[in-house]
Length: 165
Image (cartoon, rainbow, N blue to C red):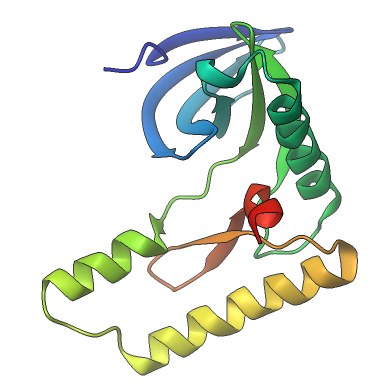
C-alpha cells in the first residue's frame, strides 16, 4: 500500500489522500479531499512526484512546467490546475477531479470482452479530444492525455508527455 493514503499538509490546507487513481513514470495521481483553513473543502486530483525523482531538478522543473502550461489553458475538455505546491517535501500539482475512466482501461475492457466501442461513441470522443487539442494548439503547443466519462465527456489531463514526442 502506498504511503500517501492518509494525510498530507501544504500551506493553509491539508489533503486527505483517499485512493490512487493513476501512476506514471514520474508521478502518482491521487483522489484527495482538500481541507482548507477557510472551511471550504473539495475533492481534487493531486499529482505527486515520485520519491525517486524529488532530488532531480530537471524532473521537478518538468512537473512545474506541466502545471504552468495546464494552468494557462482554458477549455471545457482540458483539466483545470489550481496550484503547484509541495506536499510532505514532494512537488505536487493540485487539479480538478474529473470522475471517469482512463481511455486505456475502457479500450482494454472492451477488448477483453471481445467487443468494439460503438462508432458513434468513438467519434464523440475523437471530436472532444480534437477540440481540446485545437484549444491547446491555439493557446499552447503542448497536448496531453484524455479521460472520459459515460457521456462521453473527455478531459485532457496530462501534458507532461509532450517532451517524449
